[in-house]
Image (cartoon, rainbow, N blue to C red; front, top):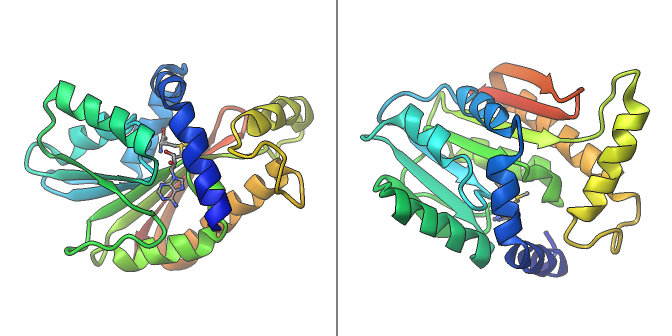
Amino acid sequence: MSGDATAAAQRFYGRWADLYDVLARRTPGLGHLRARAADALALDPGDTVVEMGCGTGANFQHLRERVGPTGRVIGVDFTHGMLARARNRVEREGWRNVHLLRADATDVEFREPPDAILATFVVGMLADPAAAVNRWADALAPGGHLALLDAAQTTRWFGWPVNRAFRGLVVASSPTGTDGYERAPWSVLDERVETARRALRERADETTHSEHALGVVRVTGGRIE
Ligand SMILES: C[S@@+](CC[C@H](N)C(=O)[O-])C[C@H]1O[C@@H](n2cnc3c(N)ncnc32)[C@H](O)[C@@H]1O
């Protein structure tokens, strides 16, 4: 991500962190999709799972349930306001095995390789999503799992009215609106989401893929060789 894009993303998510938190936790059906993404990680009790771009921590409960009290959840995000909400949540719930790290998800390093990495609604924000997916795959313990949950335009035949609404949502939720994009932001998003999935499929020896919400939401998981 360029310095300008990083600053814009941090400003945007810092400003909207409270509203984002409500939408991230209360949007009907989203909890189910988060559970599907957590399932795609094939976690076992005692595992360590890293969530890249964890935001306000809407996935933590799903991850904690799967790694149990002996496992660890590490949330990484570069936006102070989002992490502050995540930290409040962790403290309020008394989750002692959830740790937060303010860092850039595209170049963060870990002392011990995690068993799994999750990124939900994040790769569409990255200038080079394939490089990020490859770095995350390299960081995993052998046989570890990587899962992505994202929204992009649907490719189904009845797609145009759905995609029209989706495009409005993309502009409203983009840190820079339509500024700074050489192409429409929804096309950039589609391409990044697909590029990340292609990179994941290339690195994985087994993959799972499911589509939801009329084909707008995709959950892809892979076991990294
Ligand atoms: C759309 S929100 C998704 C939050 C959370 N994953 C969820 O599903 O609710 C994107 C989050 O990714 C974070 N983010 C984007 N790019 C990042 C990067 N390169 N490093 C760390 N965090 C990043 C933003 O700060 C924001 O909190």
